[in-house]
Length: 320
Image (tube, rainbow, N blue to C red; front, side, top):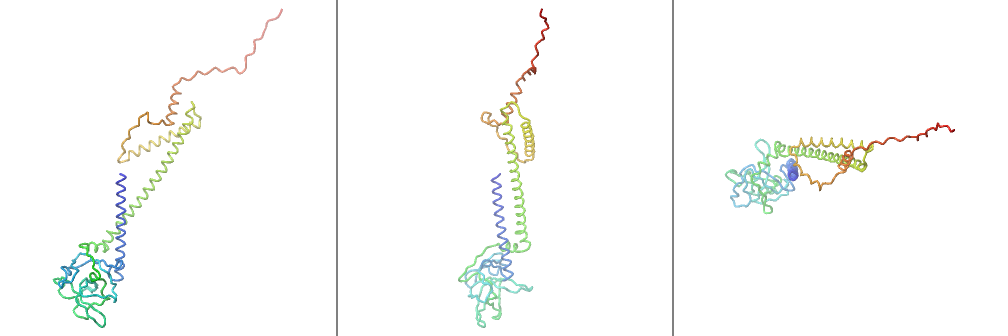
């Protein structure tokens, strides 16, 4: 039973650590996405692919890519700055406006690069031409500037990582419902569990202290009873101590019987030790001496002696 509890506590502690790490990861991703529009952690981005526009690889023979909707990619963050320099064939992430007025992150390949007013600008296109039928930008005026590019997934210097099929789970965790069910609710449950465990440990500690105090009282009573066991009788004070000890032992036995009745899995009775190998307690020695003294007939009480000797009888005879 103790081994099972130890294993269970270890598993729970591991789960607590995983939940805490997940919550920290999601919190960092949420904060970074609010500031830059893309989730960034330690210089890298974790993005969920929302379409199949990059399935199948490049038809122009460029390397990298071939990820589908529901996959997760790990890319190198560039921070939407003008300092980025990219090449044709690189796979980058940029922001685009949606039809409802919002913004979306697009992960496509650079297929053209030109100089516009002294700044390199780029045209992107999805590798899967069945889904992405035309380039993302129609004219040079619409080409992307470096400040519009937030990360690079594949380039000559960096090759990103793909995690297949876990994008849906990440999107769910990042949602309000998912964050509550996956992060907040387990943390609340684990917090309550730890509070209950602390209360139980404190209760067991107090019980152990009480048992120690009870045992000390038993030892003191046994010592008091054993000190008078050598004499045939007991003084009034020793007799009172012995009676208190008997009352305490009776109360202890009642508590033990009640505890055994409430226990779901009562412990198996331990075999009694042989009489010759079991040490005899002081109380048993005292009780044996008392029984031996009671079994002997009481001596006849002696007649009390006169306090003063009898006076000699008066001589009434008259001398002639």
